[in-house]
Amino acid sequence: MEERIEPSTYDVIVLGTGLPESVLAASIAACGKSVLHLDCTGFYGAHWTSLSFPQISSFASSSNGHLPCSEYFPHHQILSTRMPSAPDDSVESDGNSGFQQVHGLAQQQHPDGGSVADPGSFSPPNRSFGNGALAGPKLAFCAGPLIDSLLRLQAEHHVKFTAVESSYIWRDHVLAAVPASRAEIFQDRSLSLPDKRFLMRFFKLVTDYAESPNGTVAELSTSDLERPFVEILQRQNLPPHIRDIILYAIALADQDQDQEQASDARRVLRAKEGFATLALYLASGSRFPTAPGPFLYPMYGQGDLTQAFCRCAAVCGALQILRMQVSGFLIDKETKEYKGIETASGQHLYSGKLITSPSFCLRSVSSTSTEDRDNGEETAHHSFSESTSTTTDSANKVARCICITDQSLQPGVSTLLVIFPPRCLHIRTALVVRALQLGSRSEICPDGKYVVQLSTVCSNPTAGDEALQAAVDALFHSESRESQVTDTNSKPKLLWSLCYVQTMTTPWANWGDVGMCCMPDGTLDYRTMMAQTETVFHKLFPEQEFLPRVVVAANNVEDGEADEVDGVNSI
Image (tube, rainbow, N blue to C red; front, side, top):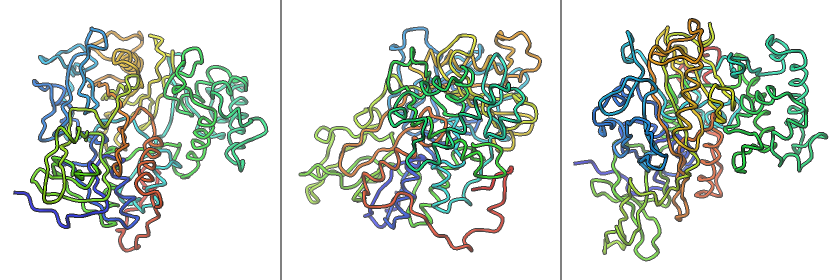
């Protein structure tokens, strides 16, 4: 029998240990509120977790096509199926887990229809490998809100980072360097003199914009900032390949910005957003003198980020319990307002406010409630199969892929980022593909091996799969597939790969004092997640400061925990 949780009343109950939930738990606890933080699994991270490669390999070759429920996602079944040839609407999805389907990128088939790359003499990844992020690739800007939040909460000793050493853009079948500063523009030999002049002039405009008190400069009117960013670049007479560098490798546009193609206004990057990202890019490149670029990656995988915020919450007094099943929500019988939760053991826990992960969906109270006459309560049991508290955007899917190779994409570089702008691959896809290479410095894999995470935002699984496959063919040589490039001797060998498509859901949070957190989306950095998390916080606590600065006594930090790692302070 489970032990009872004491006390039984809190200011906030947080369900799930995903990154948004963990940030909220830390921020609310730092405000002096009492927080109960629960997760039904035995690990931190939820959708934002990192699985070990033995777990991923076991999943890909599983005969039943599901992750073992007791060890991974107790209420999330992730189907392992071959990519169907039928129309997209025939593809079944697990609407709650967000993972639509998973398949390998190679020809070798398993009995269940799943597949992984032909390993040849390569054995499946063992414990010498670290963790593979389910939501990768994700990077943090050095001057972005995620790093700022860690600093405000004094969490710099809970997580360490490695720097992304270089960024590249795929152009004319080769990797071209992306400059991280005006100094790098001068040093880049791949750029012609006219290209350097174009970039220097435009970077100067970005600097003037960032330093102006009201965000305007002589060359940009207020109306200009609301126009598509690509129009501003065209007006600056920037060559197409320079526009691609700015749009997709620096401003990090997720989708095609061609005005003839991007008919949906949601897909168009506005000039104001573009200039803000460029200013953040330049500021991040100079924030930490020992960091060679604007991006950081958490060592040991992004699952360590959630644990860092959970530790901050615990330091501020939050009570955290893993492996705690929740069977229902407590609803006031008359007002139908939220009052608390019911655990699987039957204990009632009360709070003024509730924060949930996207996994929790509330069914209709009238059809599933049970009444407690003594307390005037109804118990509404949450559902993991209905989507009444989330909405699915059919046009917003993220195709992701994890690969293991035997050498770096660039000699001598351990951690790097590659951007594939629209129509640069042999299939002329309009999708933007990103690839993040992680070497042994990130503690993800052993010496001599590299993990590459790829992703693309797509409207259907087939388009996403084709774009990822084209990017994989461009980067790697695989004996099990015919390469699109004749010269494969200099390309890294693809040893192992796994691909899956994730359907994004939008939180539905119109129920009183209940806030729902977001899933990991297709963006490269954490700004969207942090903005949505702040919105949930201010909905529940409009008078409180989000992420208040925490003062921790110096003797609480062990000696040596603030050492520099890979040239980047552990923030």
